[in-house]
Image 1 (cartoon, rainbow, N blue to C red):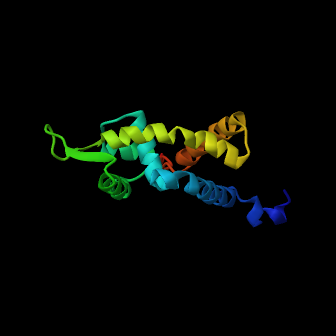
Image 2 (tube, rainbow, N blue to C red):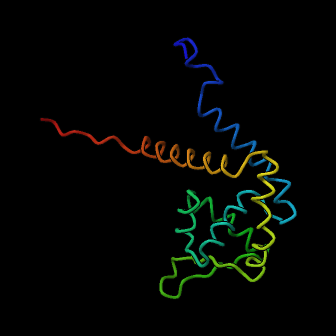
Image 3 (tube, rainbow, N blue to C red):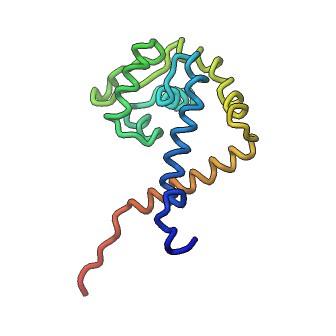
Amino acid sequence: MEIDDSLALEHQVCFALAVAARSVVAAYRPVLEPLGLSHPQYLVMLALWETDGQSLKDLSAALHLEPATASPLVKRLEALGLIARERSSSDERTLTISLTDDGRDLRDRALKVPITMLERLGMTANELVEANAFLHRLISAAQKATEPVPTRSPA
């Protein structure tokens, strides 16, 4: 890359990631529609199918979301009858999110989503595994880059 090209839009990782994210989410939309889920709702359900009965705090952490962002998603899924929210008896500040029977049953229908997405994206499973591994390395690097720089005390 020439120095003059360093600010070219097409050379920006942030641009490629933003376009890729929008494009992939758009490709999921018609696949998730028969399940009655939006993409963010699907992510919540994936986290709960993996570990049922999570606190809102833990669920938010798993999704890399603030609890204030996850809460409306959880409320909509509750309105759909897929999850239940319940205050902990030991600590009323803790909200536990659990799957309902309908939420557990939806998992069987969702098993087709990954296979369908492979077909829609025209990629092999190995290509997506490699892309996913790279993206997780990129996420980790970006998170480290946003950590505060330690300050030195004056000598």
